[in-house]
Length: 262
Image 1 (cartoon, rainbow, N blue to C red):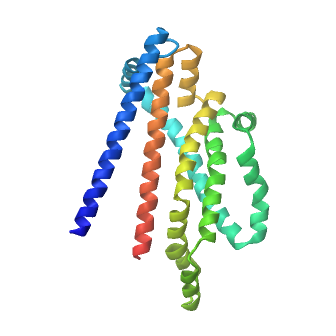
Image 2: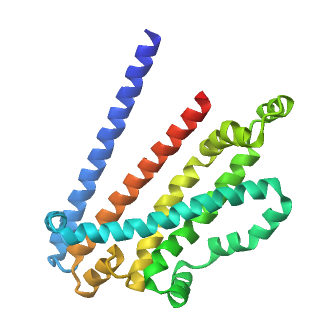
Image 3: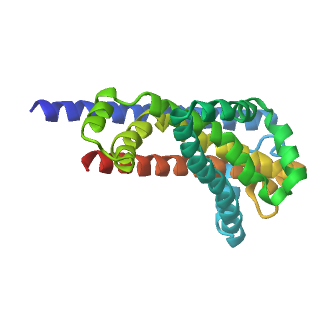
């Protein structure tokens, strides 16, 4: 009975939060509509209705899905490369002090360098075609590296001691002790890395005018003062970032639970 009542309370809290979110979203849409009406110029601030019409029209065109696929492939490729290298680097930094000292300058540079400056440098060095991949990597890597390094430093000392006593091999220790702890500690960093990776990747596409990309379409929307299209593409970026964030979180949570069961 106690379990059921607790579950009922949680369901009520979730429903209340969702209801409040919907109310807040509706209020902001009304404010947006009012601001659009007050300006009286669709070119300056498109109304929500106009943006939705443009968005639905885009979704009927095959080219839209090709553009989304290109941007998605580039940005997710950069993120996955940052995830793999960040995990390896975090492990090495925890295990070897020299590796930690060696990685400090590039990580600090990635975190502090203004986005526009390194995007321009990447375009000069590698061309606009690879700029979204590299930008996504540079933005995501420091967050993932920091999260993994923190995860290693916050492992359960009792579990590690037990692993030493029973002479658990290094691969088993990594899979059964390290990975679940890292996912638990660094989960927020992994999610933030995806979100920032999408923002930075699309920004790089806008600056570099990468062909067949969301950023290129946003640039042309700005060029022709088509705010409805600009808002529509922006909504697509927000939705794609949200979906990938939730999908990646679900994958990591599944891996953590499976390893804990084993």
